[in-house]
Amino acid sequence: MAFKKNFILKNPDDKPEKVSRKARKERQERKERLEKILAYINDYIIHPDSTLNDIRGDIIFNIVKIYTDKINFQLNEDTITGKRFEGERYYPLGDFFDDYSKPSAIKLELPFTISLARDPVLTEIWNPRSHAETLNNLATSANPWTQQEDHWFSLYLPMGVTVVHNGNHSANCGIIKGEGELTFDFEATGKSKIYDMSHLYKDYYYDGTDFRSKTDKFFRMSGSFESGCIFEIGRVIQKNRMKISFLNALKMRNKMIEPGSH
Image 1 (cartoon, rainbow, N blue to C red):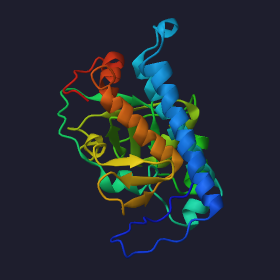
Image 2 (cartoon, helix red, strand yellow):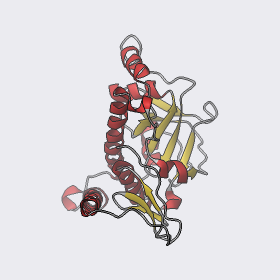
Image 3 (cartoon, helix red, strand yellow):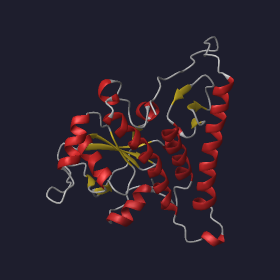
């Protein structure tokens, strides 16, 4: 799931590499795969029929977690095999999230917690030695997982994905062992931030292979299928934000005060 470098056509005279028939077929298959995922979400979560009237909208974040779990699998395997230690350590959600997200204006009145076991969480692990040591030493009966002062992270809305930036290997251990919580307390953890992707849906979309612009046909940014799915599921959440909200889901679980409409 390596993230390729950005490819952006700056003007009509730029010539992209010729796409083979095999590549075109793969792109079409990925597009159809994405469409089926979004159709499932629409048919069974957003607009379920009368036989599914007890479906809660917030289970959409469990679907997001399916794709963060897939990314986590690749991150762990690339760390175990030394690929991330020896090569490029790509951002877990890819360049599009890293480059185009912007800090949210949300003001939180109370701290809230993210569950490493239940919520969509990614870590920037890279060191095989640290990977093994934390699995051996943390989240055991003698040494339960606890958040440390050096842990800081970003929460991406509306998709509800948290990316850990420091304390990566210990947080990854918590994810694997299904234990631990991260507390968003901005007075105590000033580096942690909330990022809002909602402004991007007007102009950008993921086509199954690349992030594309609705207004600039020469824009193309590569992204993994998983990160693209997460982005497009976020679009569904944004469209249905009056009834589906990650912060509202946390409010119900953590009894936090909801400060905004995200």
